[in-house]
Image (tube, rainbow, N blue to C red; front, side, top):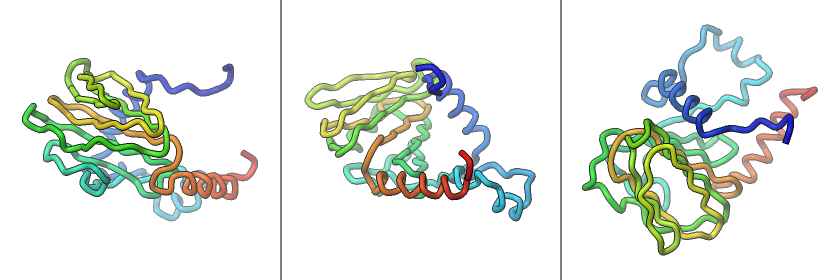
Length: 182
C-alpha cells in the first residue's frame, strides 16, 4: 500500500532504544521550551507521559521484581511497556492464562538472544527470544512470563480493553479539534 506508513520491528526497536535514552525512571525528557510554550502548541495533545505502574494492577498478573511496567491511562489504546532487568529462570507463572475481547500484539525487544519469554497460546507453549512478535487474536487464552534476560516486552491491544475504544474515539475528536486542517 503506497503512502501508508509501516512500522517494522527494526524501526520499533530503534524507537524503544531511543526512548530508553530519553526517559529516566519513567519520566519524559525535558524540552528546552517553557511550560507556556508547550501548552500552546497544536500537537501537544499527541504526547503522553508514561508512568510506572504496578503489574499487579492488571487482572491475572502479579508483580515481579525484575520488571518495571510503564503505562499511560490517557493514551488512546492499551500500550504497556515492560522493562525487564536481570530476569532469572526462578521467576515463572506471574501471569495467568487469560483472554481479551480484542486482538493483541506482544513484542520482545532487545539484543538477539538476550531476553527469553515463555508464551502460552491456548494449550501450546513457546519459548521465544528477543526480536519476536506475537499476534494474539481476540478470545485466545494466553499468557507471557519472562524466563531470563533483559530487554523490553511491549503489549498493544488493538481495540477495546480498559475503555480503549472510547478513549481512541475521544482522542480522535480532540485531535481534530486541536489540529484543524489535518
